[in-house]
Length: 201
Image 1 (cartoon, rainbow, N blue to C red):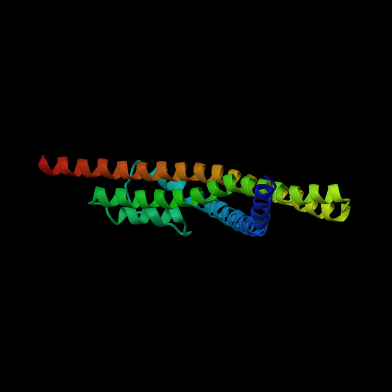
Image 2 (cartoon, rainbow, N blue to C red):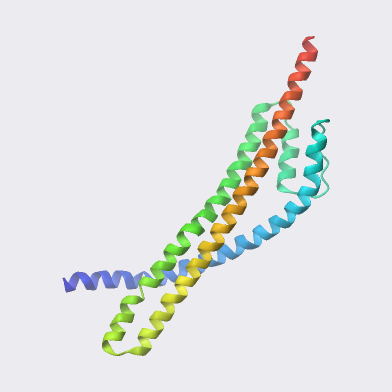
């Protein structure tokens, strides 16, 4: 039984370094995503000033938009208008936009789930050496291991928190943009049907 315990101890101890590296990498990614979301938020403020009035106008006149400020949604709307005569291609553009959004959500979802899990691993692994240090009277070793355990917990929770918040924000944005694009496609299809009926008459 002691032999089995030693094997498990070696395995868990060997995982400490990869766990710390994974936590650091995920923390860096979460900070990058935080910066990207802030930039996207500023872009959406500019985008909203152009897209919202355009959507109101679109109900009366189905015209190709002229956006002054470049944005992801604006580019997709322009691409949709380049396929006015093809419903399949318009739907393909929207599907690609949604897939790209889902990909971003996937990264944030992984951060939200894996951050606390990896943090918990980083907490539990040093506990073994800390208990060994306590039993042998090596208080310094125990203190170092406990410091590592608590630090990895905090970092893991920060990663999970950032991922969770950004995931919810991105889901809301994606739903809003998807609804806007579907609305435009439906209007275009309705306009095309009217043109067909007028030709037949």
